[in-house]
Image (cartoon, rainbow, N blue to C red):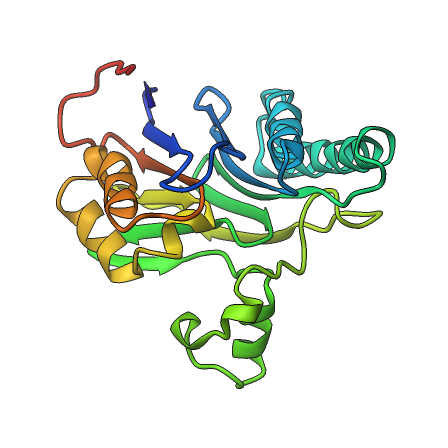
Length: 254
């Protein structure tokens, strides 16, 4: 677990392999000096997913400081295009053509703007004035069925479709990141997570955990997922804007 404090933001991330899997194929990035955070969830098994998510995060770690959100967005898109090429090359050269890839959910805070960029079913939420809002839309077969009116909630999803992702980094020749831009308000709290959390924890429980104290929410949500015998890797990151920590700002590492 790590935490970082900068004048505008404080963040805490926790990642665990879960109760079943022997390898954690999730990865995450905290780059508060850039106003950049991300979660990646690798797919493919046998360490392929671990390599894919690591390539995604390493590519994002190469992003340079920028003065405007548009410049940051352009860099993230370029780096994800590069990661896409690297993962496809990995598949061809080291994995005998076996398909691998990684979801990615990116949060950029720049000026008075919050930007989400994503591919797959890792998510970004915003907690504002007591209300939790999901800012990302899953690229999944389940979400497609909801959009078509065949399902009304994730809870009704056919288990056969639960793990079918329709967009990710490395699975197609070109990667397309979906984008959402929102105004940033004082006291906004953002949560990034892999689907290992949302498979076993509800949005209402996420909101309640943040409301009870955001600085312990990442650890608390991972613990809750583990108590429910999480079958997937679980990664949770919480980012608070404008000094909304429960305690005075200090540098925390653990």
